[in-house]
Length: 85
Image (cartoon, rainbow, N blue to C red):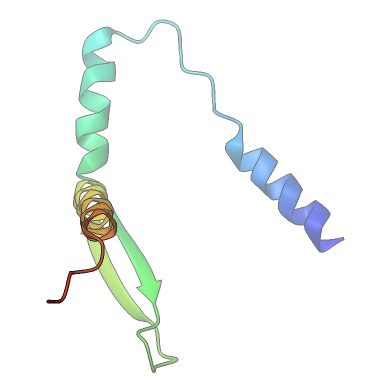
């Protein structure tokens, strides 16, 4: 029962809305830039605490931090263990 509800919710949100056909190219180009400046707040519980902390950042900041974290992870995984002599 719960699995079917989760699947239905995921399917409903994964369906992209159709874009209007008469939208000018200039408006489409400026939409991602405006979207990067949109403020998004997340509630996260720090390690060792049950009280959530609200963190607000722009979508651009979140994307940049996610990319930096991916690059750091890739760098650390490619470095391998240090040789001891």
